Length: 143
Length: 432
Image 1 (cartoon, each protein chain N blue to C red):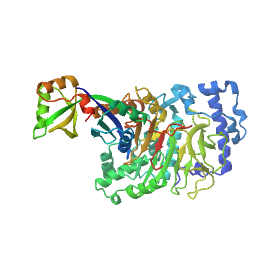
Image 2: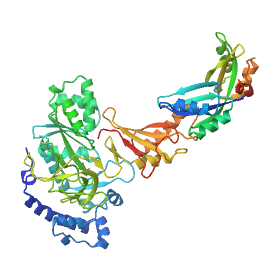
Image 3: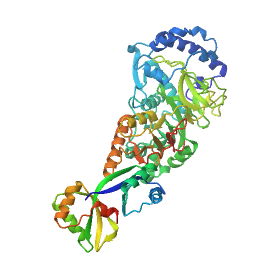
Image 4: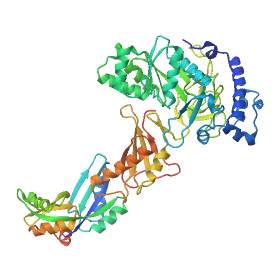
């Protein structure tokens, strides 16, 4: 249920994001989903890729500060209120969401959302219990 | 106007005679009465009678700030404590401060040289002088204060800060002379502009600005914005405080009160004396200080000396405005900061690399320090709030160490220049 997400520290400097993405391109790693959190001085690039270990290795080799975190990827009905329904489950289970972002691609007719919660496994279990599809990591990496 | 024509317009010959006599006396006093100099001279055995001409001063060893720290608190004093009537310390915020002790006569000397300085700024007993230098252990506030008393003008001892109140008093009291740092003068000007105060309607005629490095272009700005004559004042705690030198209306260098302070210029590399007009490090010897004689104190300030009669009529030597330091000391809003203090604070924290960069700017006329720190694996988190907490923790830690708030910016690992020989740790972007 746990999916590995790669986070990269980025200075707010021209061209830095491109350099990070080029590093991944050179290693032939295709990004499945990404988000950028930013402040005035720095940003954090978060990535879901087919081979997180390889991504981590090449980024580190190119002097990027990288960390790996567990997230869950869930299927969300692609209609109004779809995401709200998912969050309601977590809210009722008293689980805090740190952040979330969406995949560009769909899984069948459903949208895909990356969730980072305080506790990964209990959150995944709560979602499953409520009938929400939590994607296994192999499926995410092979998207 | 000249406060003391006898002292300030002396012929070279007369002054050199006076200086030689006083130099012999001060060397005697230092080497016989100051515990620190006595100990240091126990091997070299230099006697005051060895000083036969002024240039013999070069036979005496230098005194450094570190020596003064070693002598903390009172080992540099040449008189018993019952003769010391006042003490001050340098503006450094960490480590051992430098302590200066004054006898009653030293306070008189300080008042005298400050009276000369203020007179160069056009002060008479008619003037109202707003003193925005900090009062307390810092010499700035009280030094100016004594000079105003000596002249018999009116001192407004408002001290630093409280900009709104400063502006109110400038208007209500009809302040004619203001004393503060040049950056604060610009800050005041900006605040006055924002408050809609018409500077043509206030009575300010001149200002004595010092305690930090500044330039001709800053002078022009201050003069334009505050509608006054901006003059440069120089001094240091180790020697006496403000009043060691001051600019006259000719604005062609700062007149050193040479009957009390003997200046030399040395090469900071070879430590050999340099000829007049050449730039080097200023070395000062107090010729009359009773409480704490200083023999060849290395100021670390870079300047040049120019002899010859000035258009104002004074014959005292003029020093150029300070253009740099021979060490890496920074003065931030009047507070002395060494990059090594910041480095030490950084390295005390876990996960911080010994690579950092200090960037000093003056965005709104007040100095600001940015410290760039590399975000290592150890401090990196994928959540913004955690990274911000790390940044705040570093900022707080540095503030505790240097007494100043800095802005910490996290940058990418290996993005800061690595040392190839001497690392450029400090980038001073202030227009100095």
